[in-house]
Length: 238
Image (cartoon, rainbow, N blue to C red; front, side, top):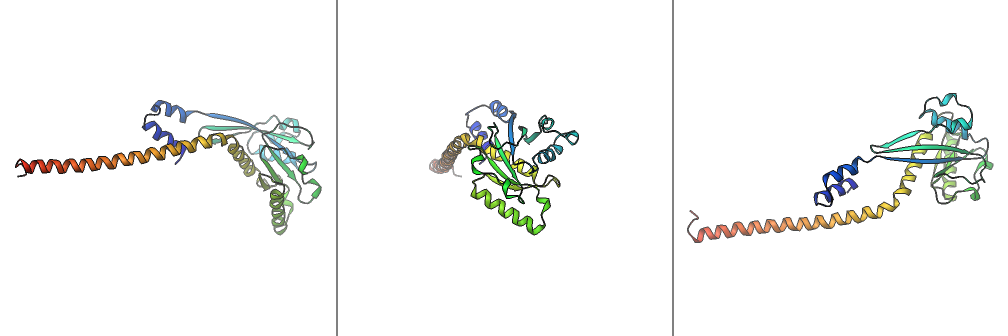
């Protein structure tokens, strides 16, 4: 049962008014997240960010510098009531402290020295391993590179992985969406237990209502039998 169904049922039982329910569903939420794009020099971070922004913001194609790119903030319409403002922050120095909500680690599958080291990881946030420049591979080599990336993702305990190409615009938008979904999972965790409690309440109330309906049916049948018997007793059955 969805949250909307739970809330509508609770409203039916008088937990809150229809006005409160309508207000709940009409509330708009705006989220703002910073995604850190990490990686050694030469892995294509600037091109990667510019590729994504060029498909979500106007005027990006005329921008050359990292500083100017940082001024662009795409707004994603996630659903009917939720928008997300994204900041994509390019990070060259893998050791400096940065404040980001999620981290995308770009590396070049053709250069093993660009694979991020474990001490560079940021604990407590979603981390995505991204094999960039996948357009440089043949089909067979590309499959090997993706297998390698998936293995590294598991070995290094990343949240997810992707194979992308800034030149051909492959996979970048998809992994941004995946990263946002991971962030949604993080922020929604405190509410999941409460939703489970509500669902359990609904189940118990549904059972109670079913019992009441069954009892009403029994009472109705008993009443009809009593009326029929009474009518026969006083000679009204004709």
